[in-house]
Amino acid sequence: MLWVTAFHIIAMTCWFAALFYLPRLFVYHTMSEDQISRDRFVIMERKLMRGIATPSMIATLTLGLWLLHYIPSYLSAPWMHAKLTLVALTVGYHHMCARYMKQLANGTSTHGHTFFRVFNEIPVVFLVGIVILVVVKPF
Image 1 (cartoon, rainbow, N blue to C red):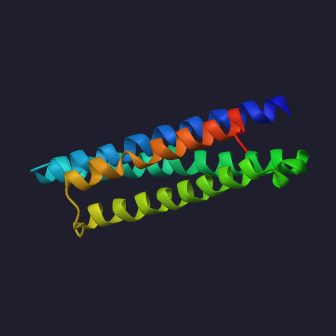
Image 2: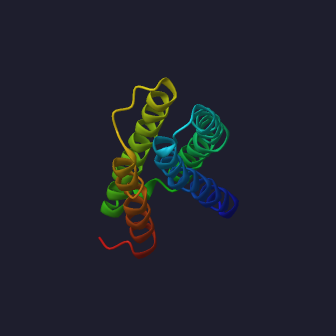
């Protein structure tokens, strides 16, 4: 189980790294003034989402379910319910990123760089909460 745990942590780290960087690309994308730059951001965002974010999310969730299968007692712990709620919110955030990415690629986004600067901070809250819940198990 230590190997599964290690790979779960690695996948989660990669997933959050992508979720930290993707909205930052949205900031730069919305601030770009020429078509060549906008086209470059579309490619970068797509590669980050398809090549790192989504595969890492799938690996994180799969390995997490594997761990829960072997340690089912965690499902009765209140801290795990809180953690799984934050994980569900993180999955929702991931899908929101995919939607914003498509809007930016199509030129239909109504959000500016200020919105994406704030939006970029949301996964930090999720990560802090998840780590504290897993390590400290406050309840």
